[in-house]
Length: 114
Length: 112
Image (cartoon, rainbow over all chains, first blue to last red; front, side, top):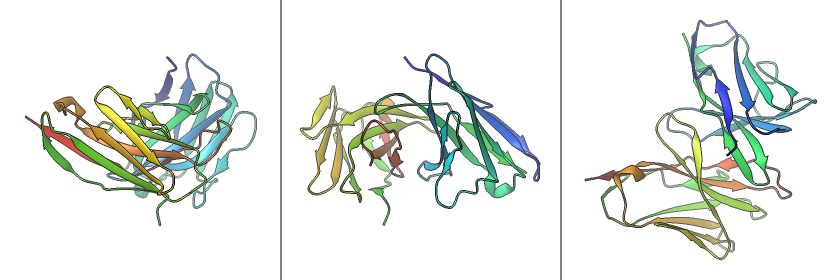
């Protein structure tokens, strides 16, 4: 079946630094990928839709200059958390469309900002 | 009002019990409905889609009531391995565009 690889699975960084998270579709091409964020005991919140070859579409309240998304190829999307702060600590999960109404999720990246 | 609402639980049930989860959604134009399962600190995984006529997959039965904007999941003969958070998920878009809206999840704990 379809596999989405997400890296790193866990990252700890200092406040003010930037962190890049990669999301790769391993055996299929994904023109669209989605980035979610999940705080403890809360639902997954869609942050943005990553579109191959064009700008990402951000959800209301998500700062595009803080959460940089690049989808340069059909198998790779990256999310960069710029100037990270402790309140950005969260579980970030990507997903990719592997068919109509079929989403495959990456294993998630747990970010801790000290 | 949240787009997808669920009872957060937790539901603590013994092995072999039958348990039901409910979910309501606010967008009456929503097209597709799913139940996902999420284990602690893991990514969500698709459990089953929910069809208008209702559908069953082994011990799991899903129902959809479009008029009431209500979705349910019934788990029969609960196993210890069923312990997880169950996420009600709605796709308000048609045409295969997979922008999913997640509920906050209902936590299930099955004990011996």
